[in-house]
Amino acid sequence: MIQVENLSKRYGDTLAVDDLSFTVTPGKVTGFLGPNGAGKSTTMRMILGLDRPTAGRALIAGRPYEELERPLTVVGALLDAKGVHGARTAYHHLLALAVSNGLPPSRVDEVLEMVGLTTVARKRAKGFSLGMGQRLGVAAALLGRPDVVVLDEPVNGLDPEGVLWARELMKRLASEGRTVLVSSHLMNEMAVTADHLVIIARGRLLVDSPMNEFIDQHSHASVTARVSDPEALKDALDTEGIRSARLPDGRIEALDVTPERVGELASDRRIAVYEMGRRTASLEQAFMELTSEQTEYRAVLEVGR
Image 1: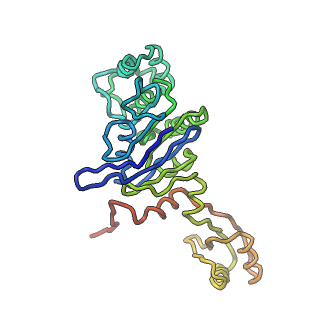
Image 2: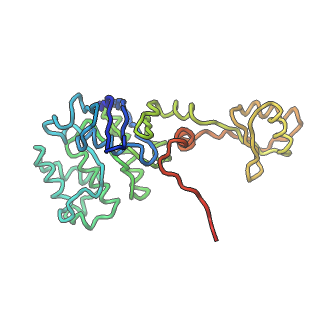
Image 3: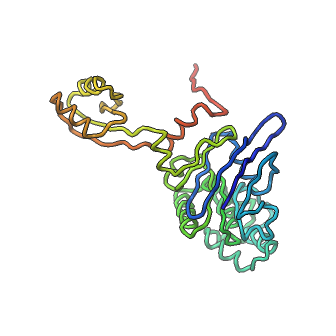
């Protein structure tokens, strides 16, 4: 497991992480989310021993990272795809990591094949695209067959095939009983990858719950209907105290109501229903609703002449 216990990090007058506690358990993909400036990267760096906490502690398999004798065999991490010596080939970058952790050189060829970089193994890293660098970073993370995997924005720069590959890899690692913590700003990707969510803002914990529970609690499902008289249906919904809106394509969208109830109201008003469907809430909607007041940096869309 990864255990974060009352973790805090202060840079001068700035409190980047504020008394943060959560646990990442094996057998599931845990998404680590938050607005820009939330403290995600700082937290991950403290978990991996790259930054020293001001207070609290982070443990991997019950021990601080610096106490792990062969860390790559316990935890594999990708924090920065550019964190590679550009003059080294992919093969020699991984070989250096393998030797330093007592791993056999044969493992290098295995992970290069696993991430699809065998054909460029002897190419210098400085010539790699962002997507190739991401794959090399994942190869390094998996080199020691670790039970804990920490990935920061692992699909950045990947093409659609690469995104699918990364998604399936994370799910497979979790299905094998490993602990997988992944940070990403891509809500749609997290929605189909993560089983559990840890969400922070301004260094504090906001959510630690299963994906489905979070979406149900922080967003609204709705029913959309294409009918013969949209205004009459909207009036019926308003009369019943059911929130609704007219969509640009003419359909009516009603919040927090069942399709059956919308159908009953349409029938009572003799309104013909041509089409009706349920619109489920998305992770993005739920995330935005939760963090709308927690965003560190705000932009105003204004087009001038």
